[in-house]
Length: 331
Image: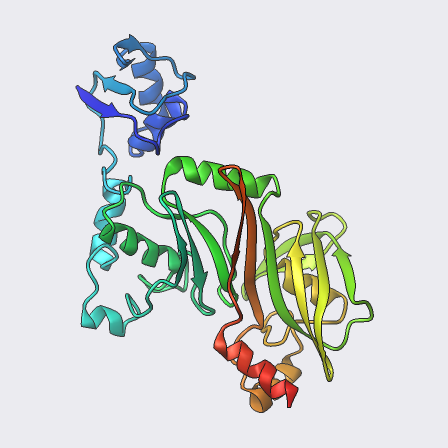
């Protein structure tokens, strides 16, 4: 018999979904069978697939199941083995730091019992993927931080930023928090503000770019393009400061599509400086030489969201390398 006590990470979750999460290496047919044969009990009562679990409930399973989910972070045993082979779960060593792992400390803007607000640097991918070495992504740094904090949940990003973009991200520290944050984002209750430097001077001090975007995949990577059949995408902006031939703009996203800001401003003839995918490549080279810009000039500077009955605001100023560019433009 396997016994599990439901903690906050699995509270308010259906019993069948809990089984899939807790025993990810088992097939769905196994779960259907043990539920049908009444081999699962919740607080001593025969469990139903669609019943909602509450914190503190005791789930007893009268069956031997494969690879029960590792209690630390809820990682599958197979994933844990792979992670250990890659060095993701070990304390960082000098050799690891040379390869990138542990080289950058997390910039935590806010730490609460339920979630973090972190400042992601430009050049760091939000999560592991093809072309990313083990230990280089923000998610892996968060896992290592969570391990040191002895958390019982794998810290999880509620949303993402492009690798080239810096700034604020929300990180859930519990399963119920992750569900709450993703719901807030889905219902557009999290307001995201960005600062960007664009080519040229905009005609209007304030405006809205509303153009549907569709994703195009090719050998060189994914890219968004304006397409009437694409997903509705809305970007609001206001000019924060005019420079000679450039504008610093404050941006508020109403929708959150991949590369939305970059694709939208490029579509109206004002691409972001340092944008190697949608930008003015000749201008980027000249700007880099003259002003020292070695990255995309886009920074997530402010988040506003409701939490526990209060409106919460978190802000993060431009990184020094972007502030230095603006100082040179002033001159």
